[in-house]
Image (cartoon, rainbow, N blue to C red; front, side, top):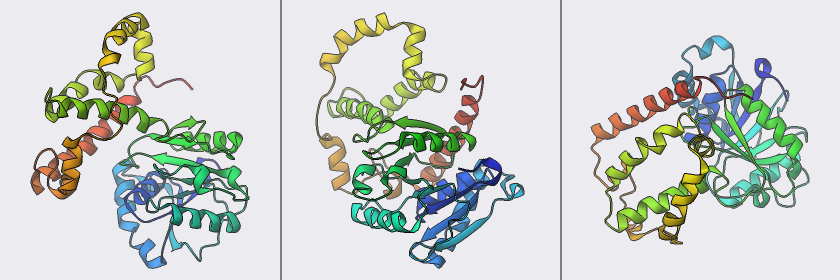
Length: 313
């Protein structure tokens, strides 16, 4: 795999995640090839990619990264490619077809990742000859800002190649984590859903409002997590207090196995959030625009905080 100065990434898919992933790399001077169903559809994604790159690094155009487009079916120039990332719709049949195509067309030394959050790479790359170089490379929205990328091993994935992919991401200012088994939800989403299960259960029981839950998280442990993660935070505060509290709290935590009606009723009624104008609350177009801009600005500020007294290694 190449270094930062001469790197090249192929992104398959022209949606929001594809544009964000491509923009994040382009911001660091990486050559980007965006592949869509047609070359025209891929080229139509250029503006969104450049917006993401500019959001991350306003000086990106001076770094010399090239932006190219092609069709998934016809592209066959893998020269100097360091990494391929698939970001198409969450359909297992579609992802399997693309990976089978790549298995045959791409030189076997080039790692291939899927951004799928729902389908494990073991299923996507099942029975493929070069499954050893295939992984989940799972991003979080907005992909050009959020540092984490989960590198997830499937049943046939090579840990050695996975570590090379991790090093490539580190060179591009991302924070990769190696997940050694492709369990449902991988790593971060499992932790996130454990929190959301409890939060939604508290709303369902009428114990707290969505607004108060946001406040409680943002201004307590969420506030601390920008400084250190939960494991290190307990190393600082001491595990004995946590262990004693857990004996009281754990038996009372929610263990529901399906989402509560407070959220499923919203989904059934089409109130799925800002994009639809309503979720737990209504959103005007002006409010939606403000919160989205604030969200991105706060994420950028948080990213700056993460660089204060940076972690070692």
